[in-house]
Image 1 (cartoon, rainbow, N blue to C red):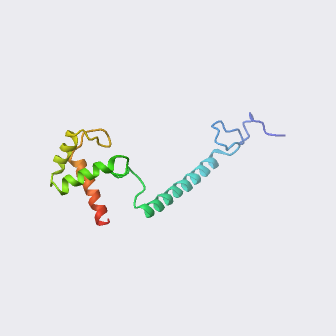
Image 2 (cartoon, helix red, strand yellow):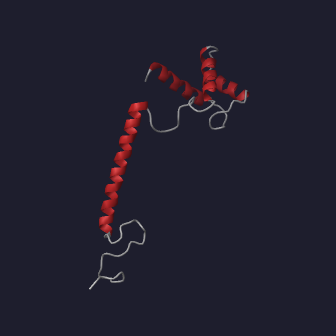
Image 3 (cartoon, rainbow, N blue to C red):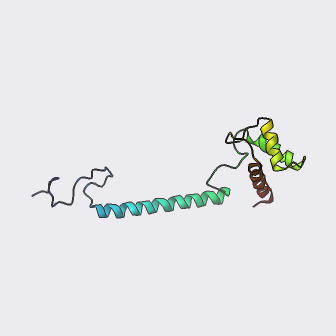
Length: 127
């Protein structure tokens, strides 16, 4: 006698959530899913490590100056800081007064300019 779909004794019932585990008991499904999740997590971790080893970074926003049009703005910021010795607040004011957009479209602030300059200094030093 074959077990039917409606047979309450049968543990091999169709899976209504369409996971592809038709006829697999729930506990086994949980184990399989946990193993697959672990494998995926490890594969992603190794990929991030490989990318970090190649480029020095792999996550987060791209550094300011790498997107289209930002290199010119970065040069202005560096010029104002090194040649004119302006503070980061004055540099932000200068950019805002001239209508130069920030990446986010918000007004420039001293701390934002300071962060950009710190990153540039780190790259020059080689850290």
